[in-house]
Image (cartoon, rainbow, N blue to C red; front, side, top):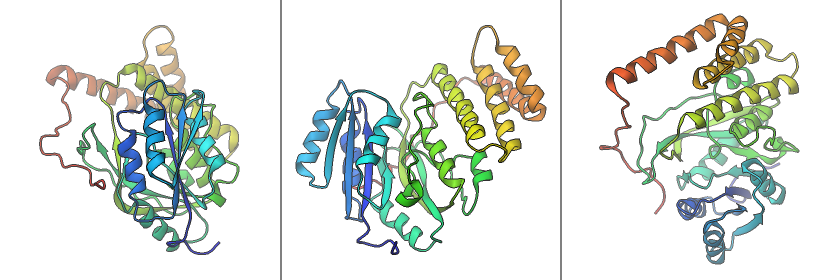
Length: 315
């Protein structure tokens, strides 16, 4: 395959379910990319609000966009539908509430061009934003490059909208439905790619990752379950590979799950996790109780957005 450049065709895939509040701004950030040679595949995953109408209206004015409709099957299935329809040499996932900087695709393709052909995906840094596009948290800028499956097991460097994926590295891989739409589908896919390919980083904040208010303990419990299931899948799919790291992370997430949940079985789950990795689980317990104690003394503090800047999305 020739080195990526202005003629490289990129498929942007946008799964959307009841995303009427954010979808249009998201799609506009994709259409405004300085890399012009792309298609935008929007999958309306059985929405019951105006998501389908908004997507259809966007497609009517943007010839590079295509709307696909299906019954509600969840995030993984919607992304996979778009991948199966995609014609690009590179796949760029974009969740329906996130924003891209106008140069995201161009700069990630440049990173590919400057990297070995063994690189399977390139990620970029992101900033957390609120509903108004204001940056709400101090940015995190990890650099993880090369053959880093071991390190990537311990740290998810991006989000669902961060990577640009080489189609040949993706092959027949797809987002997993085994996670039951609880989360971690993007990290699991990236781990499967990283198991056989290098990864690279575009060292720039090119993604606004939107966090919606109102996440409750039930959401945290779902995410803990998703992490446990993800590591179980990795253990199954890569038997004997990085076993110590996988078992340690499983113990960590079982402990977190037990500390979040209520009811029977909580302490039994902690005990089993402690037997697997006592230092890891002990640290999780100390951190959890220290956090709870601090919240009780001082009260929960909301993110300070009074001096926040707007994410530099295209106008």
